[in-house]
Length: 166
Image 1 (spheres, rainbow, N blue to C red):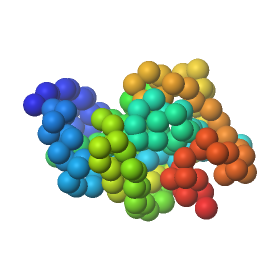
Image 2 (image 1 turned 90 degrees about the vertical axis):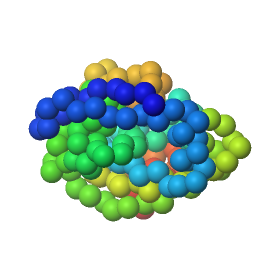
Image 3 (image 1 turned 180 degrees about the vertical axis):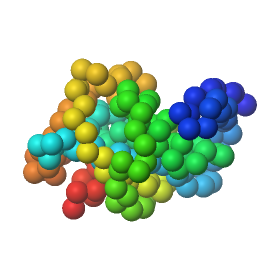
């Protein structure tokens, strides 16, 4: 089992456990994953989406976000994910909970041998981030602000993202 560090602004230095590929594969195959999805809106009412590099939803426009790790509080996961996905740490109390959403995929991060089920906790966050300041590489190849009407009619935007706005 690999260990990686994360420094939480409220809880000091904390160690987060990331599973081996085999262990994580077993989890994906047998249980739902719990994640936080971030519906980021700017002052113009546009929504920030990233073009995903990884399965599931690879090559589709999707909201930033990620999994909650074992023994990680939702508030700490929110801080970690906003820092990793947006390059800025935000507190959960600055966001509005939209609710839980089921996300079902026919593939998984390792291929298409079995499906993935996420229970995504969606949060709306208002901020005016600059595209050029957002981190690229691990999850997204690029970011873009979308008007809601164009997002809803774009075939490259994933249905799970559209469901946050319907």
